[in-house]
Length: 378
Image (cartoon, rainbow, N blue to C red; front, top):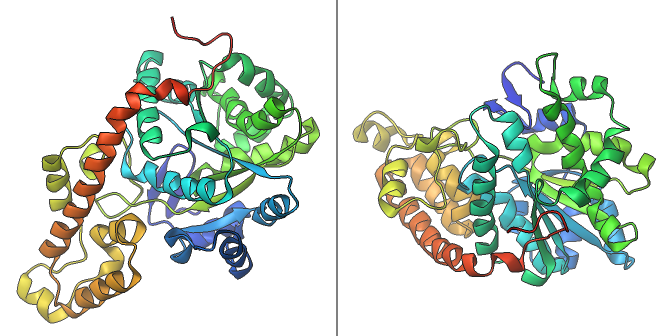
């Protein structure tokens, strides 16, 4: 990994060069051929594809081929429940819902409460389970199809998951785990084992259906290392390699790195109040100048502005409005205070509606949960 930035499943920092990550990770760029296939099959190209937010992939061509030949595919994504859900987590979920809606496919949603216990020194299993169920409310609030969406916690779906994960683990050497994840002699053995659980969900639908079916994993590119290992061993245990489509990471309000649950003042959470949203956006890093006079004369820099990035990534779908806002920023016509106010209104409106659906989800959560004989709650 380049020295000037870090991207791993557990740490992201620095000014990320996403094109270099394609070379480093050995993925493929989402090119015109892939874009053309999305357009052909959906009739509506998602904003995140138009803007290159989902920009990298592995085997999307095989996903389209399986869909076209009637074999079909399933979706798999997940969340590590170390805290409440923030907007950075919602971004790949928004795109996942687009795929589910357009292709009519099932989604398997893994909540890795075991991972966050193993890697989080200050989190108990009770903590991670609590956050898993809180995160599940956000998943349901996104509007995924109840009849085609299956949510589970690793520790509660352990009977089914272990039987797949143990087959994975037999094929992954400690040498590989060290090389891919940077483990050393101080790493606890649970953490070394964990990628077997992350990999297992790629094959879970095939096991449940009794026949091979390829899965597509929409995720941020920092999660790709888990699935490089998965793809290496998949065919050796009788399954298809999972396909992936990777997104860039929503920056924090500090203007660099990705939004992180461990930095609450620079992240917006789905449970934040309008007052908290206003305060956080009000303190956000922008591309503005030191004074109003200077900015009117020299203009701002939307490329480094976290407020503009939030509009670009999620909250302004209208291309003309976004282009006009960028032009006005560059010319000095539009000042940072107005942009912050505009984003605050957008985020507040979005989250108020989301929070209503989130609260309603408490009554139907069990309709989404995937259970096995060892995990039913007392």
